[in-house]
Length: 157
Image 1 (cartoon, one colour):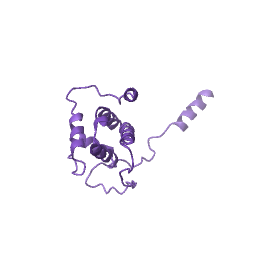
Image 2 (cartoon, one colour; image 1 turned 90 degrees about the vertical axis):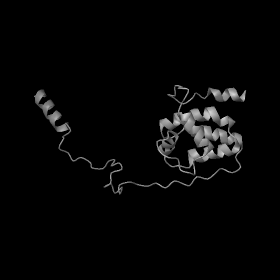
Image 3 (cartoon, helix red, strand yellow; image 1 turned 180 degrees about the vertical axis):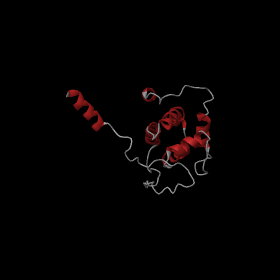
Image 4 (cartoon, one colour; image 1 turned 60 degrees about the vertical axis):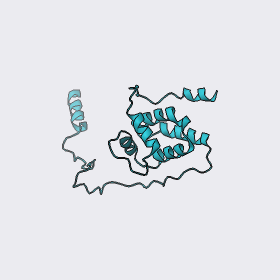
């Protein structure tokens, strides 16, 4: 009797392959993709923060460089910020702020930095050139993780 109950239990609870399969999914850049299933979520436009001291701006940009929507940019931008943020002029800080905060897609920043796609004129400049050069990693540093935050304490002592 136990064998029969177990067998019925397995058959009833086993997922069937004949169930309907959802057709919703990523279609990519196919020419027949109407993109009608995509939902555009409007983001508020980027605006420069007025009245922010350079120290506060550096701290905010350091945080924003570390907390990205994708790991690749988290590592790339946090290491870039660690190396260059404290030496950037006010103009360079504004350029970097706009670069990492205005585009709504982190992949765009990654593709521009790796030169997989051309940089739009609005983001081209000294900071983007510096980021592209940093991304090439000519010194062949091991970049597997975002930097430890201990270096921040050393600068304040």
